[in-house]
Length: 171
Image (tube, rainbow, N blue to C red; front, side, top):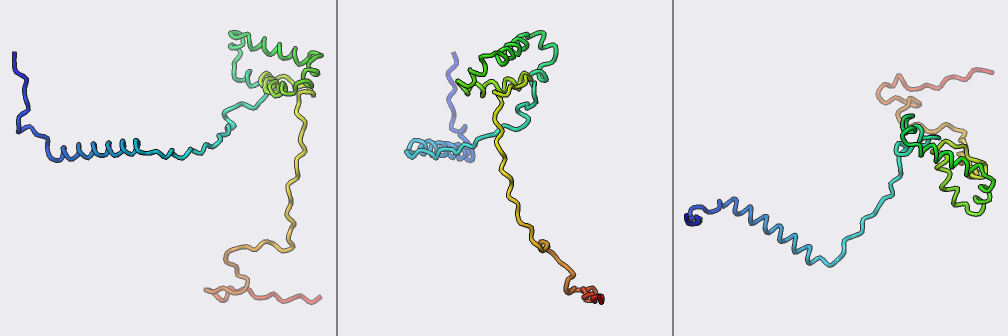
């Protein structure tokens, strides 16, 4: 059996590689020490609320039918059954009493009606809030001041272009 080869003295690490390894080790140890010693909790991140863009949710009536082509309705008849069940629920006599008893149900049923393109009954519709009119700014008798260069008094470069007062016509 061959003896295990031992490194010889001439197989030492080059000086620049040794410096690089030492630098990486000290960098790692400094980061580790900072993480272990740190007792102050970090600042909490400020979370911003993301709003949905217009492309993320379809807003047209019956968007489920637009999303699902005709062949999907044959494969998944549950869509047609759910639409029929919702229509029966809305058209029943007890629906309005149910809605007055618990108005939170309307919050769930309105999007479903929009999704299945079912016309909402008047008891399910939200009351229209009156819009506040935008405040109008009073019109000033003078036109707004225009910034920039005008020929209204003098022309600093070409004096012959200076505006001259027009003579008044006799009345």
